[in-house]
Image (cartoon, rainbow, N blue to C red; front, top):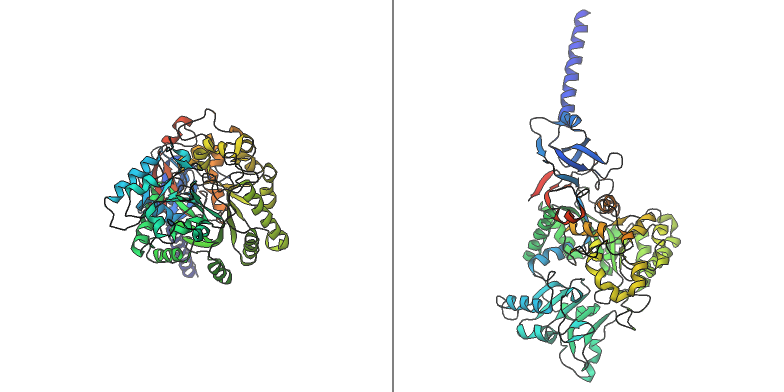
Length: 573
């Protein structure tokens, strides 16, 4: 009997030792991070001393002493040496392949005059093949320090551009993406340089505008849907160039501390590319994709098969992007009252509102979030009306719809509380205020600016989250610039003192949430990302200084020191 008891005890002890050993292996961290300021964006524990990671998942977040129990001989140790860490930043509205192609084509974001654009094209002509298209993006006439002597409706004309590139067609996208600038060769290819009585109708585009001078000749500016008159003639990108652009976009994200990206409008070719990149293990970014609303056949295909929520959390497709008006810079934003600096002009309705309502109903029925681009106050009101109609028609399906309006820059005061009432999320890019506010007052006038432009704090106080971002390549991807704009409401040159409409500033805590947890919420992903919480994905952004405490004048000196994606270091400065 004693022998049997002794054997039982030894077997029990062995079992406990094996179980403990297995438990230790299961709980051993592959990465242990400590030694800096770690902001979790988790209300239960806003700051911690250390974070333990098991492969691509957060295993522990708390004190350094407690974190030690997750360490073994194989654990990688990362001492922050006083740096600051937050959850991985999420670009809440951008154009991923546009980011990549902006790296490959002419990047005009920093040009400050028409002459600089002309010079950049002239330089590219030297290496271009005869007849090769020269493309680029990023110019914005309202940001130039000087305007050319000849303008039409506040825009330059093509003459100087055509002179430096007589044999190469040129098309340069406006920073907003809502207008473009073509030279004579490009317009010749499009059949737009021949003026005759029968051809006048070719300049008339519903939802767009071909700008013409007093003689009826096209100036080279194509607004909104009129851009297709030129763009349909530009040769399609090659598969090799697509892959290169994709890889450059991933690298740009890592360099800027971006681990998640809401891709605002993609078609079937881009979907196929993303599937290929994931299969080849090149998807080192978490993409939340919006189907382009411009392809009804594509939408109907996806309605039939339903959303694709990636179990690997790399490429998810569960939303639809609608383009409902234009941009303020090109005077395409759809307004309730005419533009202050262009009387009689109200902007453009670029999508029939009955299609917005139809899509909202389909979204509720088939499980797709609807994300509508709306910049002007009329566009925002019209979209809210269509959303509300759909919610009223299908109330049982509208309990957690998380429909969004992208940009929502200029609102009528009466519509501000409607977002919270309808539970419509706003995806607002703070950097647009910094870039646009100085000249936006010319478009809208003082009253409309002060009562309804970039109303971040009013919207947050109403109880609705804001998803931040840059709308890259409309603006550079840099999240620090957008964070700075969020909390200061100043230009990147630090003007004006006190900021524009300072009551609408975000706090630093709100700004960080808008780039992390609120951005995750805007994609139904707050359960897997957006905060440093046990069980969530191990995506982190590390900075050279404490962006939550550093003096405002030093905030723009913040740099991304390191980016961690899925528990692996993917970028180090």
